[in-house]
Length: 74
Image (tube, rainbow, N blue to C red; front, top):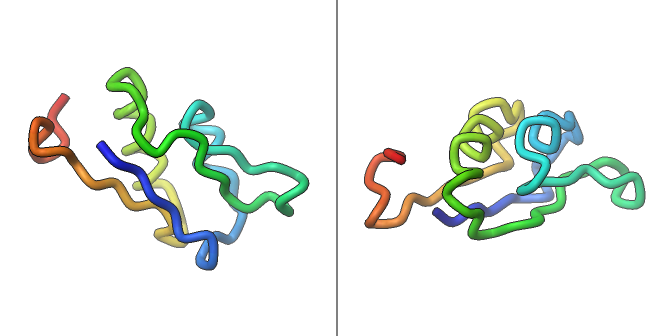
C-alpha cells in the first residue's frame, strides 16, 4: 500500500488523523492541514488508512494498493 495526499485540496477536517493517527497528522503549525506520517504503512494500519480515505470530505487522500494486496484485501 502506498498513501499519498494532496495538501492543496485538504480542508483540515481532521477525520484522517482521528481515524489513522499513525498514518496522518493535522498539526497546529500547519493550520490543521494534513501531514502524511507514513507513506507505506504497515499492514496493521491498512484498514484505518482506507477508512480515512473514505471519510475525507475533500478526497485529499489517495491509496494505491500493491500488487500483492489486490483490491484492498488484507
